[in-house]
Amino acid sequence: MSISDLVLKNDEKAIFGLRELYSSYGYMKYKVSKFEEYDLYARNKSFLISENILTFTDTDGRLMALKPDVTLSIIKNIGNGQQGTHKLYYNENVYRTSASADGFREIMQTGLECIGDIDLYAMSEVITLAQKSLDTISGDNILDLSHMGFVLGLMEELGILDADADILVGYIGHRNIPAIKAFCADRGLSEGDTAKICKMTELYAPIKDALWAVSDMVCGDRMRAAFDELSGICRILDASGDTDRIYLDFSTVNDMNYYNGVIFKGFVKGIPDSILSGGRYDSLMAKMGKKAGAIGFAVYLDMLERLPCDERRYDVDTVLLYDAADAELVMKIADELRAEGKSVKIERGATGNVRYKQLLKVNGEGVEILEAND
Figure 1 (cartoon, rainbow, N blue to C red):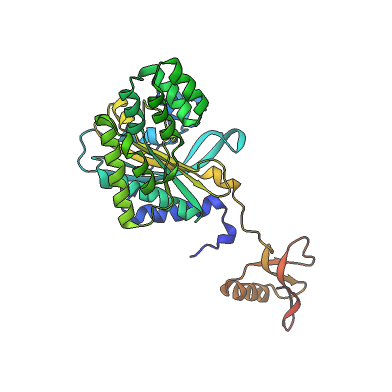
Figure 2 (figure 1 turned 120 degrees about the vertical axis):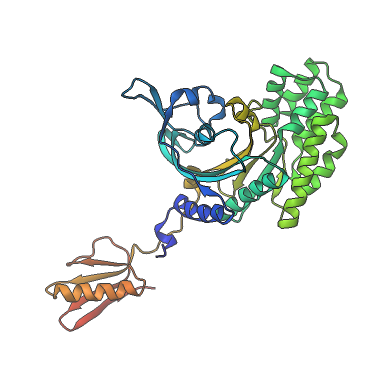
């Protein structure tokens, strides 16, 4: 049975398209519980999109939460020491405050996780799926790519550590050049070092061009490893398709207590905020006692409400009127019309405010056409 796009909302269309996409790459659907103990989220609040969590007391006295996130639940339930790589995707309801509305909402979220021995191919595959996810939603999209190792590696080389690194990462994330310059002056950094941080922050270009632009900045083992990783990913993605819509943007940063490698955000035309976010989160795995690497992303389907929906000129293809006609004849005619792929609403008299392409009436001899619209 096929489902007409006209009866699906933007988020519903995305769910079906993304499920088909992830399955075609061998990712398996994963189901998690609707509830988790509140402590799981309390320990990792800065990992969540929203710190607001709906809680309740279970019958055994435990404080439980309606899950605001899926990744934490998946990590919690993945066993240590399992062989191979877990390639999982999910369609789950999460419960949190939404950027598009006030108060708590039940939001359908789709995403995937790749957990295990994460190599260059695994990272490239997940990034490819992130870009294809955006393509499923809109052909007019951009994927911004960054690497926490490159950003933090530069800070290490310049002697910026701990709390200062947190502060500077915040300024970089907001592209706040005046604040960055003031920070560097206050810490006694040279004009040359300040210029490096500003150059890294302001850079925004297709990844192939951008890597050349920052190659002369690389210093130290951590930056070199990050640069080599980004270069390798670029080569793989370029061999498999178009990289023109993948931009290198080091202002795309995330919490360094959770993310340790490549990170990315996806945007589509018509929505000012990112609708997709993800990255390498080995640090989160270690924090939760798991000995494995991990990379994944989530698509925020509630954001798709901001995209315009296809306008329907008609509510239904055919309105079928009847008066004293035989009920069996009415049913037979309606079934024949539906077999032709038409939607049919049957009314005994007035049509009300229904917009229709065709108005028919059943009489003793068959069907009479009362009105037809283009």
